[in-house]
Length: 113
Length: 284
Image (cartoon, rainbow over all chains, first blue to last red; front, side):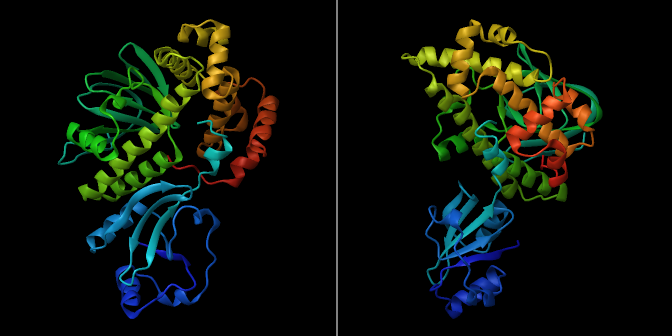
């Protein structure tokens, strides 16, 4: 499982319990939380998330996280930016897990598939 | 044969590789057929269709099929047979009506592979190649393959049928079936010198009626559809094969390289060779 941080809401709280969760359960360097990452435009309309995490394979990552006891409030589903799922961290931050997908070729063909 | 895996729930995944082969199958379950590279001729029921990597074919239980592969290089075919219990569970979870599986004769037809389905299949294939034995995870991918299929099916049948300007639903459905047959014929014979009359004959419609209703449903005239299909398949060949440009021009049914280059540039804002140089191969 390889996760990286794409966005954190500037005021997203990172309590010690959440820090432990992000570092040990998700394998993410929490130092990156100090950086203010711009919210991606393509996500604005879809989910109001405090934290956005990138994965290269959403189904595999969800499967592994479920095995670690994480339950998802939104199962993997398709959105404009790709395949995504939602869970809540121990301090209540809404985390959006997303596998970004490039639909440009499909769009370029102007609906013709 | 390269790989076969039967899961405990009786879902079956098979990836076969051959450059010359004829295979016959009696399907006892819904089976999704995808050509990962190259092309294969499918005969099923009284029909035949050439399957390319941009399309898929779902065959129903009880259907017999024959697949013919004849190519200079190995052709890879993925088939996924979904057990009845898996299909029923999928339909229950998604709320899709059981009759949607066949939708009155629309079932056995070629439908485009969406980006999502191609990516799902790519992930599934990667796990199978790695030897993943986690069936729960493999079933997740199969579930999403079905979901991706129904998304395309709905777009290609249900939404296009609604665009037809007939007051009676039964007329819309009958005309859509005929247009679907013609579209499949164009897709299978896209690189041959097919005429509008040929396609209209397949649809059992007059040429004028066929042209008008085809454009209503698909948003393109049959000729525009054919040209875009040729360009789309040329793109695939440019990115995924070493064939020279002039060979690809002939392979996709264009007679003149200069008109192909002009059409390609007008549609995709770059020349074919720039397109080839710019990108990485598209995943199967």
